[in-house]
Length: 487
Ligand code: F6P
Image (tube, rainbow, N blue to C red; front, top):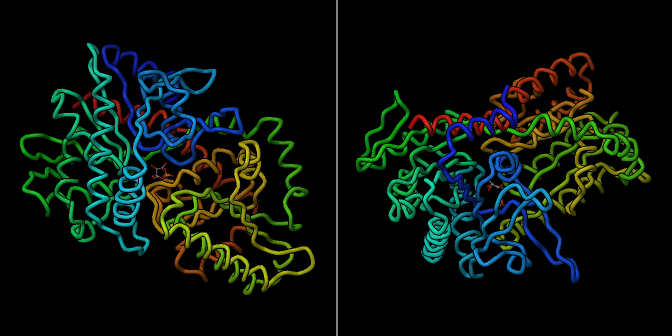
């Protein structure tokens, strides 16, 4: 069984001579002004949830883009700060971008071109040359920030995600011997989809400068290898799962990402969480007997509108649940400068209002939307208190909410409804699997989960907990590192 200690030992054994450097767009801890004071905020998202425990165990430097308004006044002359506050377990090194660069690189190329290109959620990617130029500049800045860290220690660099496709190439131009890997946190599309990207060759060349490329599931590795085969004059070795391009070999492998199961279970069992579970019914506005929960970043790939439509259908088809059932959608707002995201918020709001108007009776209404931040105790209490957790992504690399929910489900109470189109569905087979596009069948699945005998529920949840306990985040990081060592 992998845990913090096994990972620490592995790193000590294999990496004594190395400097461990993680690079991502999103910073793990941002510093923000609260009046005249500065507070430290842990950022949201699957990437930080997964990598922060690894960094807290491994130590090293995490290079990331600065998004906190008080970051500049916190960092030292090398743009670094020790995090997490008080624990000081690793260094966060910040890259500062201009507003134009941020707009072109993050809101533009990363999230209006690559994000919709890689997710099958039927939003057309926007390819714009100005976005691309800023994307290249930003990747160069990340690479420079990494190169500044080089000293007598050999660097071991672990890039994260679709924001940094060109970074390995730029780093290797400065130091050809650096060992560089990249983990891709979102799906990789099939070659037919990828071929529309005008910058496809530069992106593939950038990615193939890495020594190891990781994806969540075999299917995404397969798509990547097929893309290389059809787009490049590269040697694709299917047996070995590797691509050789211009004399350099890149290993391509699946590493299903996970969560810190033990820590989540332990925190969810804490006294303050148990107390909060008891208090929740009086704190949530409409009265209810059955609580369905979703926690998502507000993104069109998460299928939030489709879930509300399914709840509507459920209440229509099974009216016996009216005045008893509520759907609590907690949303974290992000990428707000992109019009599609702004429009999505309006759409969610308006569909929720429509459904609430249709069913409202006295002080009961079925849809509760909450976009403001909640503390972690409440977050965990919601996982423990709900009767079902609805993960309805239209397409998702992994979806760590599903794994978090099962890890926090210490009472073996709530059932997981999980979209078939998430990476997590390949592992959590005991969940009630749904097709989020098929509103009617999701309505039936909600009923099935509510009415499932508690013994069956317990059995299924237990199996999923065992799976996540074994395949935890430390095993994920350990396997990734072991593979790189072999290379
Ligand atoms: O899962 C993909 C991803 O971009 C992660 O890298 C990140 O943790 C999450 O989505 C949140 O996105 P953003 O950093 O754009 O808010």
